[in-house]
Amino acid sequence: MKMLLILAIPLVAAISQGSFAQTPTPDQLAQRTLERRAVEAVNWGMSAVNYDLMLQEMLKKTSGKVNQVIYWSRPLDWHNQTLTPNPDAIYFMAFFNTREGPIVVEVPPAEGGSLNANFVDVWQIPLEDAGLYGIDKGAGIKFLILPPGYSDAVPAGYTALRPATFGSYALLRSNLASHGSADVTRSVAYGKRVKVYPLSQAANRPATTFTDAADVVFDSTIRYDASFFTSLDRIVQSEPWLPRDRAMIDPLRSIGIEKGKPFNPDAKTKAALEAGAREAQAWLEAKYDAGLPPFYENSKWTVPALPELLAAVQKDFNDPDKYPVDARGLTYSFAYIGIKRLGAGQFYLISIKDKDGNAFDGGKSYRLTVPANAPVEQYWSATVYDRATHALVRDLPRASRSSQIPEMQKNADDSVDVYFGPQAPAGKDSNWVPTDPKRGFEVMFRAYAPTKAFFDKSWKLSDIEKMN
Image (cartoon, rainbow, N blue to C red; front, top):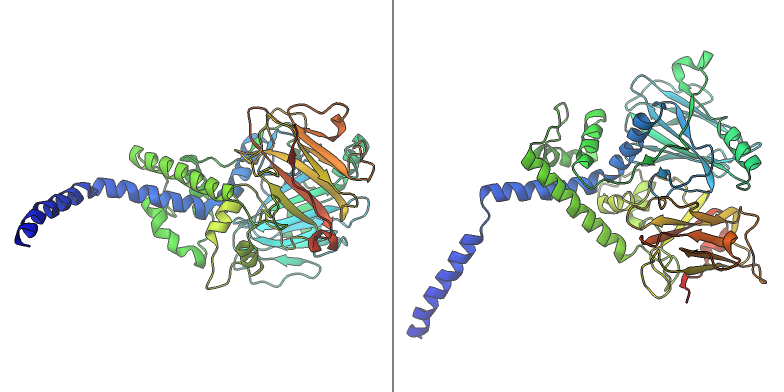
């Protein structure tokens, strides 16, 4: 036994020396702390940075301004590089700021057109929905967006929205009967009936300014680099700290983001931020690849909204025991906007794998069969997005097919086959969505004004199949 103890002493000493040699230096610990906190900052700040990227594209690439409206005068094409947008509606966007007082937004009644409109704050927490399936049920409404802490009486005739931030945002989709030029013109004209003006000028309201962004490369895809933190700093400087987020004040200060001070990281800090952003991207992509909750049993169609996030949204993130930052970070890495009444005006399914469980390859061909009698009161659509960016695939002539397309061919049983691939099957161009052979892709299925059969699943969407 004595001999064993003697032999063990050098071994323990070697292990101890090895452990000591591997102990990080103070500089290494500082660098690791920066990187670790950068990862958490990306995840926590994703929804607000997502908002800021869109705002900055408007301010830098168009003549549009805050408290005005930008729009796309034709169905979206690849020039619109927002996250998973809908190319089968006419888009109107408005960014609001209430630092100088309340802002009025008038949504017109559903006469001669209709909107699916959603209003959110800077963190993309839903404030309200408007339009046929919103709070007004198509009757039209006058929202009054109030600054934080506003205590004056709300004038008669207005519905108050009370974001916790000075900034807020609206996405208003003007619905299309078809992609024909006359229907597009009507949809644009209807959307331009929206009015935005300060409450202080309500007695003599100015005309609303509309700026067309159709030919702008409007790129708000997430940048996983040091510029992410520049966006995050803009949010911290311009918006109040919310009580639920005060625990982030010190972690952000440690990476150079502090209210009232300039953000100017040195080379070492910038390198750590870059590394943290890349790690956050890898982590979020791994979570996305692992799969969202399936909509049907044993199906590749998933719901791009995590249950814990939906529950938190319904409580305005005020549950003192829950704060699903991870679910929010993941969601806003591939999508934007928040919907108060998800499932009333629209519902979404997304698929990143074919029936056999393989990722979609832009160089191969696939088929989706949409059964007859789709349970929607407005329309359904299937849209292809770039798997890496979650935006419309660049330089392709179109991104989707929808039930609004009159030339779509139907099968004998009234089902519809939609084809995805680098080339259209013979005679099937009207049912084909092109893909880029060099890019992976994902598919989103939209159901606008879905009915009961969609949710009780008596009508079921088949998985997308690879074609031989």
